[in-house]
Each structure stands twice: as structure tokens, then as C-alpha cells.
Amino acid sequence: MTVAQSKLIMFDFDGVIADSLADQSRAFVETLRARGFDDLATRAQFLDFTEVNWFAALVAAGVPADVREELEDAFGAAPSPELFPGMAAVIERLAGAHPVVVITSSRTSVVEGILAERGVRGVGEVLGGEQEASKTRKIRAVRRRFGEALPAWYVCDTVGDVLEAREAGAATVGVAWGWHGAERLRRVKPDHMVHSPSDLLDLF
Image (cartoon, rainbow, N blue to C red):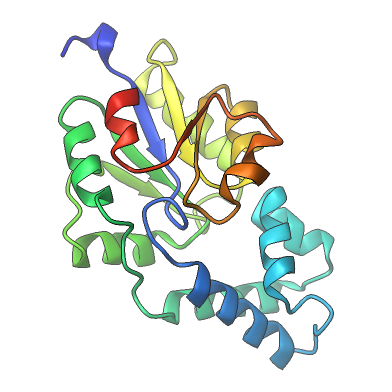
């Protein structure tokens, strides 16, 4: 494949590669209840926080830094999630022709550990939330490294992801199997919607 045909393909992790919603939302609810934030401690609120940048939403809701850190600890301690069927093979196939990067709000070490445990090959780099809270800034940084002439795509599953990637100048692919689902994602008009991991091979 020639350079002109190559694309920079960036993936979100939770809800796109890993089926982590049940365990992470449970950790969110339990942690906030234990710290007295009962009004925020619901699965619906967990998902609503991903309508924008996750970390900014927590700050805006008045969740203090020590509780935010406890949430990340709880997410990291959750059981290792299964991957969505076919996703490991799709990533490996795509990585044979394109640079593949994971940009996530989860901790880098947690994501790298899951990818290794699940035998995912082809991811060149993981940029986690502890490195930089803003996905927009992370996407811009990766685009600069690979050259902004290279078409850049972000594969994601939440409204907030689409908005942040768009601000960074990347085209967006919404996945119907993720945390927000197709109907919610369509409100912000991602450039493409896919309904199974194998659809990504047709797109790229």
C-alpha cells in the first residue's frame, strides 16, 4: 500500500475495542456512592458524562480530584474486559496497511495490559488519560507526528469522542456497538457509522 493510500487510524478503547461498560459503570456508581455523591451515582449519569470530555465533565459536576483519582483506580481494578468479537483480528489487519494508535481516557498501563492479555497485535502506541485529559490535544499531537497530510480517522463510540475528534481535525467513525449506540451518536453526525468490526475493513 502506498503512502498516499495510508491513513492514520486512531481508536478509542472502552466501548470500541473492549466491552467494558458494565464493569466500569458499576465501579463508577459504587465509588461515588461510597463518597456521598448519590445524586451522580447512576449508570445514566456515567454515560451522560461522556457527552463531552470525561474529565472536564467530572470537574464541572464538582467531583473533587481525590474522588476522580479513586474512580480511575476503580476502573483499573475492574475485571479485564472481553474484546468485541473480531476486533483483535480487524486491528491486526488494519495495522498491516496503516499506523494504528489507541487514544483513550483510561490509564495507559491498564489498556496496554488488556491488549497484551488479549493478544491484540498492531497497536503502535496507547495514549491514556493520565498523559493528557483532552482527546482533542492527543489527536492533534499524533497527527503532527505522523504528518497532517496523512488522512486521520478516529473510531469512537460516544458523542464526546466525536466532538473532540472533529475539533482536532480528524474524520470520525461511530461504532453502533459502543456505549452510546447508533441513535445517540447520529445526533452529532459522525462521518461514518459502522455496525460490526468487520465493517472497518471495508471502510479502510
